[in-house]
Structure formats: C-alpha cells, structure tokens
Image (cartoon, rainbow, N blue to C red; front, side):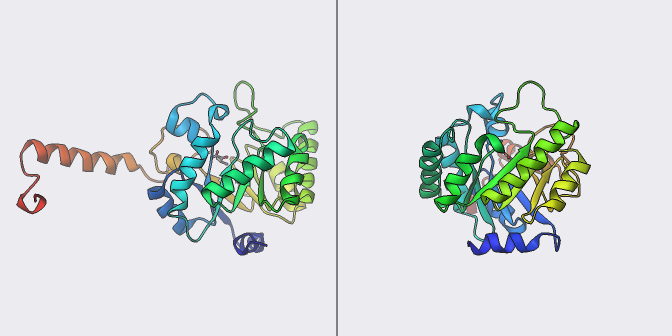
Length: 258
Ligand code: KIV
C-alpha cells in the first residue's frame, strides 16, 4: 500500500485529516505544507472558468492543472478528480484513470457516487488504482439547487449502505459533502476508513475546503465556507502600490534595469 495512504488511514480517530484543493503550482506549494491530501478538484470549473456546473470540466483541463500542481506537491497525497462522463463504464474508467495517473503522476483519483458506480470503482481497485470516494451532494450529477443530504430515512439508509459498499470495494477514504451531522457521524463511526467532510460537521475524520474559498480569493456564500483570510486585501495592496509607483516613476529604479 502507498505509504502516504497508510499514514492517512492511521490518522482515523487519532488526529484530524487535512484536505485542501489546489489547481496550480504556486498554491499547491503552500497547501502541501499543511495538507495530508492535496486535491485537484473539478471545482476548478466553477472557481476558475465560471462554468455553471462541474459537468463541463474536461479531462484535458484536469490533467493540465494537475501537472502544474504535481510540480509542488512533495509531502501530501495528491488526488485528482475524474471529470464527469469519464467513468461511465469499467473500460472508460480504467482508460481515463490510467491516463490521469500517467500524465500527472498523481497518487489517486476521486469519483462521485456509491452503488451506481460501484462496478467501476471495484474495477479500478482491482487494477491497483487508489480510489477516493465521494458521497452526499454530488455536484457532477446534482439537479437543480444544491441541497443537503440525509434528511429522510430513505436517504440515510442509502448513504449508509453506499458508504459500506465503497469501503468493501477498497476506497481508502470518502468525502462526505453536505450530509446531516448525525448521519455523517454514524457513517464515520461505522467505517474503518476515514471520512473527509465538507459541510458535514465536525464528526468527520477530516475536513476539506476549496482553498480559493477559504482564503477569500473566490467569492462565495456557500454555508460551509469560512473565510480564514481575505487574500484579496493583500493582493490589492501590492497591485495598487505597483500601479502608483509606475505612475510616479518611483519604480523601476536603476537597480531594476539592465
Ligand atoms: O471538486 C472539489 O473541489 C471537491 C471538493 C470540494 C470535495 O470535490
């Protein structure tokens, strides 16, 4: 087993797992200092390209961003989202996962869904691909307004069954997105593998957020996002100073010229 995955599995209960997104080298370099898992999420579709949904993200976009991220990720486990429509059958899932891994040298891939895609997940695991699961709100297939999951008994049962099925199929961790706290807690307790929550309460074994959201670079009013710093303030400060010094001819000085 991959040593980084072993370390993550060992963290269950003992200490919280940190997962953060990165879409490029410079952000990944900082993320890698704090994260156990660096995720190249297909959220890059909405964050960077203003796509209405992650369904528009292509394999090429994911690979290109992941190549940049790979340049800086040294310590953490690098996981890449498989985009929508790239794992519809066992063969397409394996072909595309192999391409992602070959081109980006990532450690694992993430797929959204439970029972509906279990054959593909089992096929990937059988072919020695490290897979991370994703349950609850599934942005790739969600219809209409995003809603929390686990409110009805039927949903609770389905989520719990899906989580058990994913674990049995060999995924090493599961992202739980927008799942009611009591359900996320129950799933976390029933699994040996860790759960990584996003909008799913403190009961999960770890937490993930989109880095651009938590640093205030991407404006969002999603309930689960906490803005830990307003990076735009610092960005503006630097840009304003540059513009002002160019106008006043304070910059460039002799030492900045050849
Ligand atoms: O696409 C993404 O960034 C994700 C995380 C938010 C879990 O899937």
